[in-house]
Amino acid sequence: MKRVFILCVFAVNMFAVSFASAAPPPNWRSVDVTQFDIAGVKLGMSYEQTLTVISEHFRLSPAEIKQVKDSTLYSYNRITKNKQPTSIRVKKDNISVEVSFLTRIPVNSGDPVAVSFINYSLPNTKENIATLKEAALSKYGQPSDSRRQANLMWCADYNQITQCEPRKPKMGLAWSSLVLDDYRLEDAASKYDQDLLKTKPSL
Image 1 (cartoon, rainbow, N blue to C red):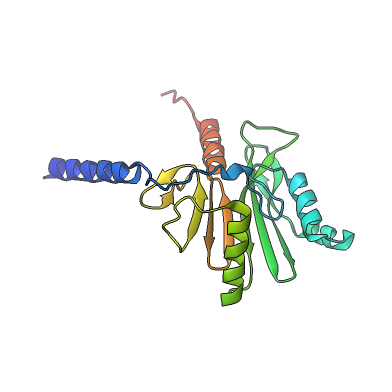
Image 2 (image 1 turned 180 degrees about the horizontal axis):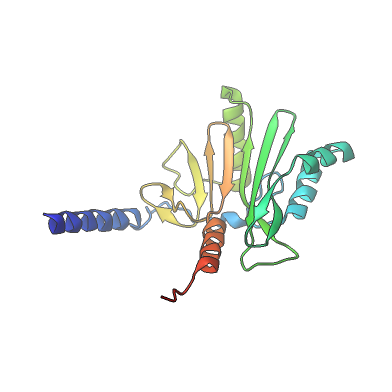
C-alpha cells in the first residue's frame, strides 16, 4: 500500500507540474518586468539608488529624506557578516511605497543588497482602484493574459495555474496595490547561505 501511495503522489505531482507548465494561450504577452519601474524604483537597484529615485519621484524635502533614512529597517546579514538595509517605506499624499532588499548574489561588498520587492498602494476606494488600473495599463501596457480582468499580471514566464511563474519576476495589480517582485534573489541568497553551511562529516 505504501508503494502504491508513493506512486500516486508522484503521478499527481507530475500532473501538476505538467499542467502548470503548459503552453501559454495564443494571446499571451511576454513582458520583461525587470525593465519596469514603480515610482522610479526597479528590481535589482541598490539601497542608495532607491533612495535617490524615490526622493526625486516624490520630490521629498531634505527633512523627509532624512526621515526615510532614519526609519530604514536593518538586520544582521549572515552572508555579508554585518547589518544591511532590509526595507524602507515612503508615504506621501496618501500614496504608500514599500521597498524590500535582499543580499546581492554574487556577493558585492560595495553594493551588498538589491531591490527584490516593491509595493505601491493607495487607500482602498472604488475610485482609487479604477484610477490605479488605468494608470498601470497606460504605463505598462496590456497584462500578459488580457483575458483576465481581475488581478492583472505582467511577466515573461507563463504558469497555467497562477498566470505567472511564482518564483520569477512578475508584477501584479490587485485592488489598490501594485506589486513588483523577484523571488530569484531570495532563492539565490538562500542557496548561497545553505552552501556556506555545507560540512563534510568526519566520523
